Length: 191
Length: 191
DNA sequence: ACCGAAAGTGACACAACTGTCACTTTAACT
DNA sequence: AGTTAAAGTGACAGTTGTGTCACTTTCGGT
Image (cartoon, rainbow over all chains, first blue to last red; front, side):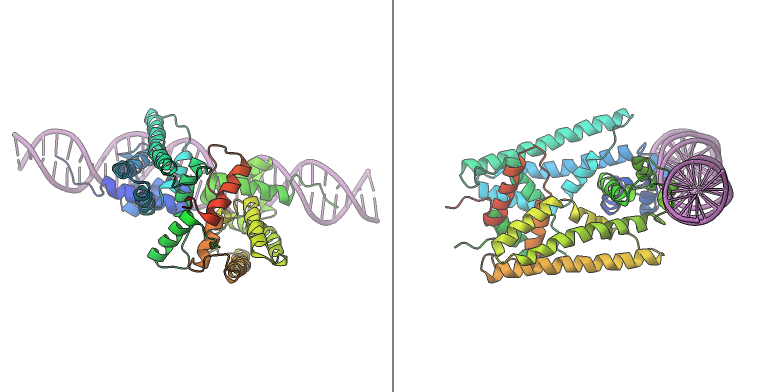
């Protein structure tokens, strides 16, 4: 019934993600995206009215994928298993928190679509915390996590440490194990 | 011999820092800066030829202040004291690593000035690591730090964890102590 | 009072990004 | 083969940022 598309929505999201990470929220433009996809700018406007709409739609997709995976944490019954699971998941989605930060830069739009997307995003964000909060609660009730540490810091710690740049190219396995070791038992030698 | 300036270089750097952190490297413009300083754009061009020159000059100033403070670490003789010192210093300069990241986004300029500034910045960056490397070496030789952890991870850990956003407004003191506790001894309860 | 030099202004030409739209292309369906 | 509708294009007008420059303002020194 119609002509074949030159780019799939998946490709478009993939490029959007790369360009956002390379140029930042304000550095991202339709021109860059069109060049990367090798189509004209006009073609993109067939699917998204503007940058805000495109980025919020992309973020919804991204958060959706992440949440679907995250929800699997609930089937694991022990804190240790959940810890490994969460750690691996965040390593796989190493840019998620950076993207969430970009999401917060989206200006309050005049467009209805964008505003409802932002509301949806906020709801998903809360849902994300709900699952992670449960994880922390389990850890504390199992007496695995130190009770005096604020819940949000436990989560912030995991999110932030996976993003430490491995500039000197230390093997991924060593790197991940070391981060886990520090988060779990610290960098200080036991006496 | 001349008219009084409407803004000092310090004020200009202060605004540059704020705007960089708010808008990112590509989102930063002379127009924004001029508005913030309540002068015309033209006035800024009296001092800096373009955005790259302004930002590299600013970064040099920023790194300089940081290095001057950092060098004081050498007078402390024990690892524990150096650890406290470094931790406090990085908390005081909580945005330094984010600014360094922006520095890496500066395109290879045609201008001679900008290129030499970038070289200077890289030299300062190396010098920074030299001092921190010494800190890690001391920790390992005093058997305070676990020897199997990569040196760069120890540093990355400190840099990255101070930047964990305290969204729920936990009191600064509790927050800092908790981060230190985790980095030092982990978030897991000892059996 | 007036001169010079540094500070600041606003207008100009240019470049990049935005959003729109009339138009062309292409594939499926009759 | 002809019709249809989605997909894609490129040109246009509007906005925002850039870099420059002739001009004005303001101060200290003479």
